[in-house]
Image (cartoon, rainbow, N blue to C red):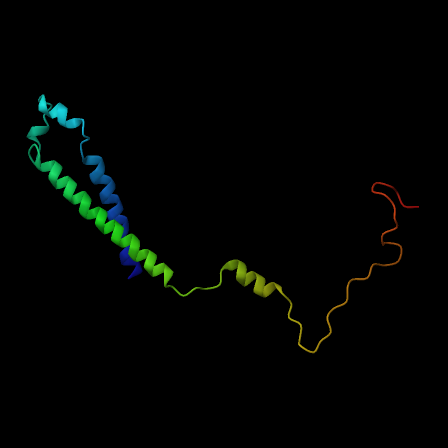
Length: 123
């Protein structure tokens, strides 16, 4: 079902883009009044504007509906743990309930903080 909605969504988007690019702007009507040849088109002088406007409105409504449908589908999907959550779950060592916690690491003698400043060579 989800794949079908995606296919219809993409086709509606491409259709809206194509129909918008085929339509004439508001300034094109002025050129048609002086004989630019738009009156001899396939749909007549005003028929193309009505057909393209209606087809664009229908495809825009389909696009809007499929957008809402995809939003609904993805909001009601079962949420699975992402890659980061899975990585964090596997990286933590499990300590049995009765076991003692590991002690802090012990530094060998002579390698601890000797009180020397940074860059000094210890004596």
